[in-house]
Structure formats: C-alpha cells, structure tokens
Amino acid sequence: MKRLSLKWIACLLGLTVFILIALNLDRMAEIDSAVYQAVSTLISPAMTSFALMCTGLVGPAALLAITLPLVILLPKKEYRIPLFLNLTIAVLLNLGLKNVFTRPRPVDVIHLATETGFSFPSGHAMAATCFYGFLIYLVWKLASSKAFKHLFTFLLGMIIALVAASRVYLGVHYFSDVTAGVCVSISYLVIFTSFVNLFFTDDEPMKQKRLTPQKGNALFLSFSYALQGISAGLRTERNMVIHFAAMSVVVVFGALLRISATEWMICVILFGAVFMAELFNTSIETVVDMICPQRDPRAKLAKDTAAGAVLFMAVAAAIVGCIIFLPKLWVLVLNH
Image (tube, rainbow, N blue to C red):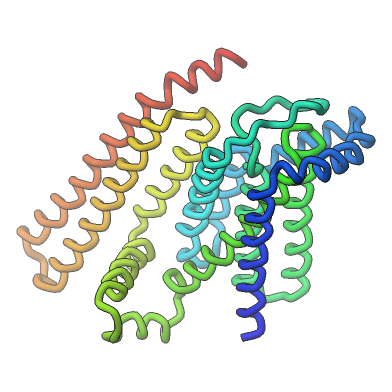
C-alpha cells in the first residue's frame, strides 16, 4: 500500500507541476533565462558533441534500435506489446500537447542544433522519460537482483536527465519545456504501467477475477469487458506484436516527417481497421474451436477466410502508408 500510494502521489505531483508551468509560461521567462545563462557558460566543442550524443538517444533510429532487440530478448512476451504501445502513446501525447500550447522555440539563445515545430513541452524530454522510464519499470518487474535493479534505475535515470539537459544546452528548448515534459511523462507512466499491470500480467488470481461475473454499473462493466477482450487478444496473438511494431514505426516517422493532420487521421483509421480485423479473427478462431474441436474443412475455411481478411486489410494499410511516407522519405534523403 505504501508503494502504491507513493506512485499515485508522484502522478498527482507531476501533473500539478505540469499544469502550473503550462498556465504560467510567461512568468517562467526569468527562470528560463537564468537557467540558460548558467548552462551557456559550459558551451565548448566537446560539450556540444556530448550533448548531441545525449539528445540522439531518443532519436527515431535509436528508439527503434533499442526496442526491436528488447522485443526478442524480453523473457516474458506479455510485455512486448506494452513496449511498442508506450512508445506510440508517448509520441502522440507530445504531438497533441505541442499543438495545444503552440509555444515558439527559444530565440535569444545560441542554437547549437536545428529544430522545427513547437517548443512546449519538450518532445525529447517526454520521449526519454516515457521510454527509459518504462524500461525502469521492466527492470523492477523482471530482474531478481536488487543491486541490478538499483544500478539500471540509476543509469536509465541519468539518461533521462542528460537528454533533458541537452535540450536546454543546445538552445532548442526552454528549461520550463523540459521540466514540464518530464513531469507530465511521469504522470502518464504511472497510469500506463497501472494499465499494464491490470491487463497484461500473467497473474492467475487476476485472470480469474476478470473471468468472474461482476456487479456494478452496466456502462462501466461494458467498457471493462471490452478492455478485457482487447487485452486477451493482445496477449494471445503473435501477429499483434507485428501490428504494434508497424504502428510504432509509422507514429515515430510520422512525427519525424511532420505528416499533416489529414494524413494522421488516415493512419489512425488504418490502425483501428487492422487491429479490429485481427480481433475479429481471434474471435472467429475461438468460436470455431469451441464449436468444432475436431478437424473439419468448414472450420478450416472459416479460419482461413478470417485470416485472409486480416492480411487484406494489412496489405491495404501498407500500400496507403507507402503513398504517404515514401515521397517524404525521398525528399528527406535528397536533402541530406
């Protein structure tokens, strides 16, 4: 209970600090300026190279390069989809917040890196906190050695701090941007990991509790049953990992290439269509197995047809993705 209460206190504290900063951005100007003046005294070629290396730890290539091997190496497969889901939500959350506040980037500073888009909250600070913070969660869930847990918590925490500090040093964010980004990400992580604990664990008593008929508000229970059905499909279908990996790649590169609002809506609709098709496929396979446990050509036809529908939807989504992204990637390659 003590650990649980501290977790939610951290969530509320992070959300409170974020709201206070967001509502007082103009008043933060003096603090932002003072912090940058102190940080700018450290500017040197060696320090700039180090800052660029730190900020690169949450670049699209770095995040995907770390995520993909982790998916293979994770000892418990139920954490694979949350790993991709966390990365996707973090990027979308940052894009949403940036477009709500539309704060311009710093101007009266030395720009040691080039960035476009809005400044508040810092996308790199949020990505670092969400991604490496979730890795801290996985370490505490999966590791047995306390020394190992403490060591990796310190190392991953240092990465978060260095990424946040590098954004101020490089002159692409205000101190308030990175502070708010870290705080709102801590709040998000508490909620997200609580969701993972509830719907993606292998805890048998929890599973039994989910299967037991419950009493309560009908609307609330309908949402609860729907979430249980989604989580069951996510935990049992290997193809879901592939779909989530593809979605994460699309979201990360969509943010990098700054696709339009219309293109985002198209991508979101396609995400929903592919996952809906996969869930329907799982549902049909389960019902067929219940009704016809023995081998039957008609059962095979039903399963194959459902699987074909998923493949058809996935191929269509991939073609649309190529239409959206290939021209932008080609321009990016030509500009480099």
